[in-house]
Image (cartoon, rainbow, N blue to C red; front, side, top):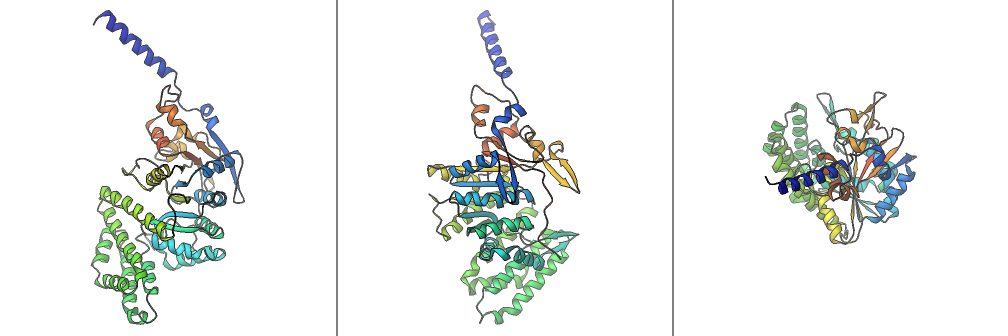
Length: 420
């Protein structure tokens, strides 16, 4: 190697070394300028972080809240966020639940004062236990806190639409809905078929013992159930969407038990987009200018590539907002502190938790306050020279897909809206 080549390599090495040395990983000090704190008191957002959130949602046409299962904090936050969204002219909420379930929730919002008790009656009627585990008909709307944010939507006179699959634990309710939609003249003729279908289905639930594969096969091969579905769809046009939801629930379950996860997720994301379009068109929602709030699992509402290797509803809405000359705001909720049996746990110290994976961000959290971290400038600061931060791969992926991260104060256990 010539002396000139050696000099060039040395210069390059020193330049790269200086560039790397000049970078910092995220510290509390570096997070401080982009972190804001707020409180959630008596159902209201208060503090510097609350004002920041209000300004951000006011700028967006679509606000997407990506949460995690069974979170009381997420539902409490949603109930407090809805009035602020309402002030910014949002009037529609999309949930990642089945279309029939979402239509039921919307009908219940017409009497918001009785919504919590009506949902409890539904849970009491259709809930069941398997191996000491309780299953309720709407897994994403099963706590009192869940019911409260739906009630708040009703008080504000919002529209609610669904774009997900019905749970395979909600099939008896779907059969009952099909029967109720038959004409008064037709119901007596089909009562026996309906009751026999319900009886068969409940026996399958009782006997499945966690064997979902056998359960799916029995439902698909039950002539009685399939005859009832066919009849109900033919006798009432209103039943078409419910029959479709029943079949799709079983299809989704079959993908799951046969571990065909690629096929399952590819089919699922396409269905979600189709159903969202269908339900928004059904309420004359103008996708070019009307505002939409979406709440569902954090993995599905990001922009870009999902962790499940597909472009989902979140990315579609991000692209539509760009096309419209507006913007979408993607908020992810990541808990750090959790109260269990009276003991506060720090999830950042526990492996296989979101808080542990995103520890460099979550370190900004406080036990007595909520925290919101603005990720929007970090793309430039971590991907374009001069690079300011050294970030691990998971945090780099997060800032590509989300605009804000909200970290609740201590997460408390949700109370089920069920008393049997």
